[in-house]
Length: 311
Image (cartoon, rainbow, N blue to C red; front, side, top):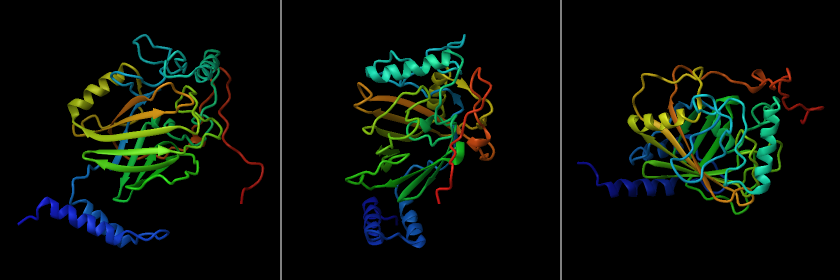
């Protein structure tokens, strides 16, 4: 006879309490594996594997409400152009931020390319990294690892823990996660703003130390995903070189996220990314081997260099 559900939940709770390492210690692999087996006794969505979002230059705006900065330049079919000119008139932007977006657009219109984390090979940070076409998700009960295609940039998410009272700023910030039914929620603060090329998107929209991002991941049915992809196709260019499995009709991964920063934005804003299953292997993609040429200048983007070793 199967145990009642509350018995299973009690066993999981007691096991977690018994196996949780003391402060400053690390759980052994055996303890981690046992915790993972216990986790499987409850309903936790499986987001693991490789996913792709083969679109450029941006992400899906929300169906309604305040959304991200979008491209002012449009192709004949209405989708955003590959040349990036952010809409500085978006009401989410405070005046100073709007001027920064406008200046970036003016550089682009002059047939040059302004520096971004992408073309200068700097760490992307959050939420800038979300434009990346590929993502791998590795799940365990006490942590989740997100690996992004370019340079295999990595984020680590601690599960079921609070942010520290004093967060030390870092390139990707402090990310903590939890499950709410079928949804993985990741809360991020402490993204390092004192850095080169501090921007939340490819249009140069700035951010401050007050930046706060909440991500919500869930698996959606094929029909719902197909409708979201159709909406996205009206906004962004599909990149055929990014291999998605054309025959896959199972669950898709959808990320809906919120961005707020009281020093930059007038209100919190929202965006969506609908991922398809990746086809084939996970190719190596190293930024220094794939520099972006500057429009009209005939020169490649510069990568970070040092005049002397730092060790």
